[in-house]
Image 1 (cartoon, rainbow, N blue to C red):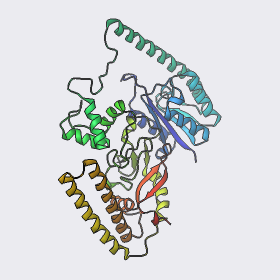
Image 2: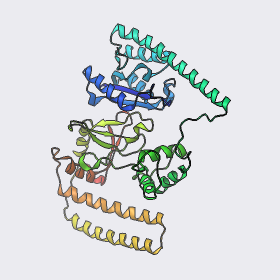
Image 3: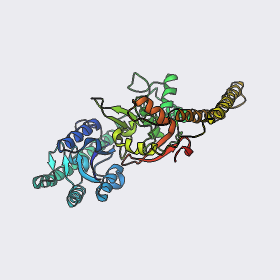
Image 4: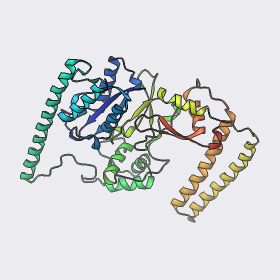
Length: 403
């Protein structure tokens, strides 16, 4: 069934007088969708951050995903903050509006008060497109003139100093901490423990700040498959720790709306790097999760618990031996970490069996914490589609449990 889509964009020019923050744009499109009677919970948010509106669809992933949704018939309405957020090229805007008109998809803009479902709205769209392109041309001329003047005076062109470009800052230490920890959150903890101060934060390093430095120095870092990012919002959310962003691999964070009734799962790095989509409501995920849980086949042989206890005792003894070997210096840290992780994973699988045996049926009316405990015992991870954020694969801790 077609869904309403919203597109957000901010260019790489950091001028508060010309740019609108992500929060302002997101709130505006939600308000606009509600005004026209669309379900804001079903609103698909697509964005391109630090991308010029002059770029084509091949260089704007979020915009490309939007065009694909329109052409595939998945889009019922298009919302954006203003026409200049969609593009700053008259031909590109004309093509977009024409494509939407052919498919009876209204384009609605918050700041420009445009609705292409009306004749006057379509006319105003073409006028505003010309104005947007003119403003972009003027802005480009100003930037080129400012750069030429700085070069003539022998001044550096850059105006924003990135971390590591000021005295007392060493970006290489941030990259080294990330490679040692294997995750942004782990690197942040190492940097804080070592007393390495970030810029502009009295509370120390955050994972998103580490991600920004790492992305600049190493655009394609090798991430540990199970340790990247901070854990998602604690166990007060039904799907905490189970969802991973399909774009950057970060664990999604659970957030409650102001009234506390609706839960969303959000990628915290969505405002740092370009994402086709950054969030989805819990209500749009649960039907697929419930359908998958319905395939649960509880083990019939309860005596397996006794065998698992013997295996658990052997694993605990093995963990103690690994710790002794590391403390004596018989094995290096990398080998110690690998062996310990293998033992921990095996013990977690045994714990999951006990939970499933003790709880043969799930009551979806339970509070979030016990529900999350059972789901975490069943699944290691739930993979999501990068555009729709709907589950595409469930990784069961014990594949034999699925009938």
